[in-house]
Amino acid sequence: MAVKIKLQRLGKIRAPYYRIIVADARTRRDGKAIETIGRYHPKEEPSFIQVDSERAQYWLGVGAQPTEPVQRILEVTGDWQKHKGLPGAEGTLKAAEPKPTKQELFNKALAEAGEEPSTEATTQKKKQPKKSTKAEKPEQAEAAATEEKAEAKPEEAESAEDKA
Image: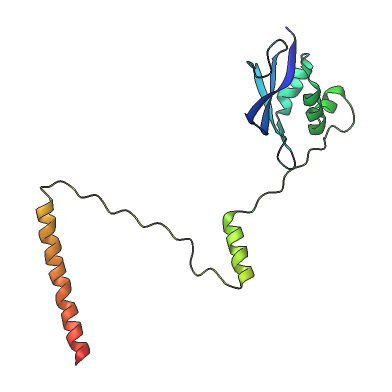
């Protein structure tokens, strides 16, 4: 059985991304794969390339033939040179710069505005528990009414002191 290492297209129109797969040479482009050994996203800057080097070396060693685009990807990662015994096995893969977190961006914007964050991130208020069964409602209503009366009396005393 002739085995090829090829690209399997995924994604939407004008937004492609690919899996690097090992498949029988007779299968169609998006057909069944024997194994997935990597990913390739050409639209990102720089292009995202991830290849499982160990599995790529295994499949190249047992005779799998890469298609031309896959061979170029393997040259960038250095796997093709490693397989052929050529110099430059470290590859020329460019890594994307790590993106700053939202918190870092927020603090940077505040620093540029000349302000310091007044508080830490706010949390949402907890939802109040839903009302329980009807049997408990009269008891709760009585308890709430007594609490309101108890709270109202100290407030009346304070307001009387303020007036004096």
